[in-house]
Length: 228
Image (cartoon, rainbow, N blue to C red; front, side, top):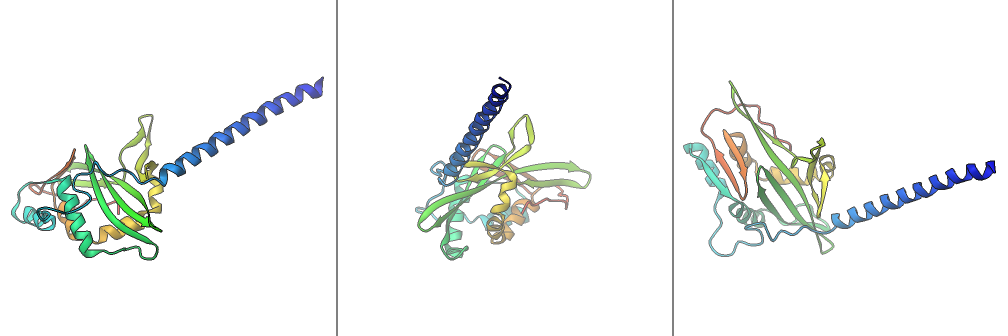
């Protein structure tokens, strides 16, 4: 009887452990599936072509706003049509080899921007994205701007666990962005002047639903934080 009583707990633990492993494997399989499915960009205004009127020259618009000191509102459509035209002229597969950059889309939601890179490997499309959030603080030295590489917390109960972006349709933690940072850094390097005029030289920067609102009027602090 003693042997029988000792066997039952071990058997129960074994079944629980096997069930746990099965659920973990199932979760990993589901995560891998969603990570390989490119996200739907049909809701992103201006992405997918530059037919019709020529896109707005955002580089010149940003330069003029900074030099002449007036506020500027850039729509999601403005940004994506300009990116489509600029990338078509300046890029042709920056990653080379079997992986090709097909396009970049910017989705603007309240307080958060999502930069989506559309790439193809062996003729199969996939997407990776990064969330960007702006925080501004005022001090006697002026307004300081911090650009955070996250889209806020996953859950209110775990505020330190941030949403970093998406691999395909899967939202991933901020730490996993290290895997794709070289690609985003390479993209950033192509638009140094635009980033400087649109972020570092602006006293007020606000992300709204479908719009980026900029104002250079006011003093800026040199402590601008760029996550790239």
